[in-house]
Length: 437
Image 1: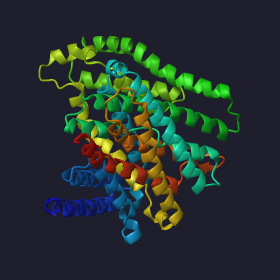
Image 2: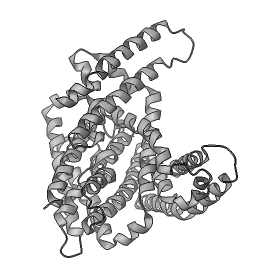
Image 3: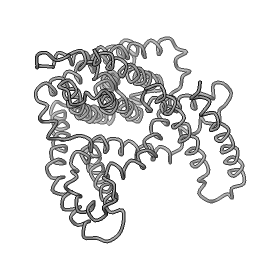
Image 4: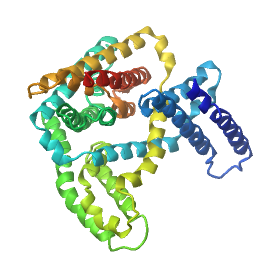
């Protein structure tokens, strides 16, 4: 209640901002570029994201959940007679900003990952990650097949794929708060979660390629699958090996230039370049952004940092941009959730079945822990949250079509979001309970 009292002053501020924006829009001269809807949307989304994030952090939960639920609330006010925010989910400019937010998010995850430490985690992390991709995908296919039997079989497999990845950020946050990130269980969880995400991105690339080939009327042969997997893995390997050489040369060139903001500008250019190359290779742009983060090493831009002793590192420079763009993605995803679909008990049942499949599927990860004496259940619990990666899968699926129907329609999208919320909410308390034993 005290938190709600503190947040109450922002409510009239949002209301006044909306009134002024509508007045300004009415007075805008015709014929020009109308920025007012976008500015109005940014006011609403950013304030709502911080209100929701603050509220959830107050109760020890991830701010991501607050941002997502803020979007769900705004998007569904139309069902109670307030359609003011319904149009926000359909603004193209917001979609562009949200997609940039996704790139920043995966770029940051890549920056926080260390290829060397990933390799040192060993066979356990690889086996845990493999089980964490295959088992949930198979379990997710079942509910999709049962609840939507008339949908194309490829949509069933894509729904299963949304359960494959693990949210590195959420698990890392809990382990860090408990000071257990360097424990054997913590290293396995984090290493497996990163490998899990890479595998998930490969699965996404394969599924996208299969659906694209099928939708165009072509035949998808076994060799096509081999080509897509080889292309995805080849891109990641080339990005890590060749990208390191390119990044060294790029930042060496930048170090002889004059001016401010060179580190941030060249880092973003490198991120966007690899995202572009991934897109051109037929992969998702987020694969390139993640690879760019893996490639960049602080030693590459040490000269640029040394030029200004007060210069923040790359994480610090990216943080303000991420704080602006990433919440837009989560709120926008929430805005696209139509709660009215849950008036259909079948959809509500599907969301519940999908959540159960998501939780149970990741418990197979515990069988991948090869070392004796470790808490295998803690490893399984740490792999549960889907977080932002599951939302990215769902968002991409919503843009794909097969035989004239969307791969992820409104009902499936809403169910996936519910699954993401529930798995993200339940993981922190379960992991805290287990690791404190």
